Amino acid sequence: APPALPASLAESKSVQAPPAAAPALPLGSPGTPQAPAAPPPLLATGGGTSPPPPPPPEFATRLAMAGGKTGAVQLTLIWFNVNDLDLHCIDPRGQEIYYARPRTADGGMLDVDMNGAGPATNRPVENIYWPKGAAPMGKYRVFVNHYANHGGGDPTTFKVNVLVGGTRREFSG
Image 1 (tube, rainbow, N blue to C red):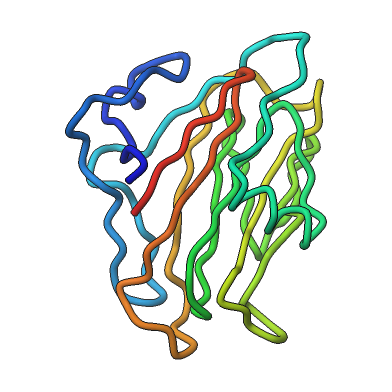
Image 2 (cartoon, rainbow, N blue to C red; image 1 turned 90 degrees about the horizontal axis):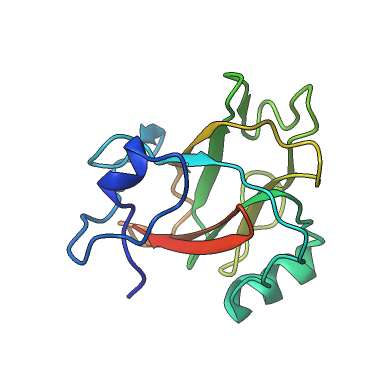
């Protein structure tokens, strides 16, 4: 299983290797914002001239089918049933991106949002990104919210892939 969100990330200025026994993200009742057991992860952007590594195949396939984009910072959520999970991010300037506010003034964007309205899929993906050169430097807080149960079993398990500073990390809950 992928590593859980490390508590050490909350105090760092860059992505670090997770501790071996970090706790998993909790996932509670529908409609309740979910936060990690430790403080939310705080991520810092970084430089780099080489192209970012591609997402893992399971993420890449869903992103390609949905038309998801990448950039200097990319946050991708996948889960495995028809329920509606929502990806949230609070950027270094305090602007929150999620389904009700899909864009920030500095170019951050929720470009894929699934299972909220319209037909539901059991291979959903949500994606937030900042284009290269547009991501503000600083700390990013990432959350997953179990918004609605559409008939899938709970708890709904999920994975989040984070691209920041040219490095990808995966977390699960």
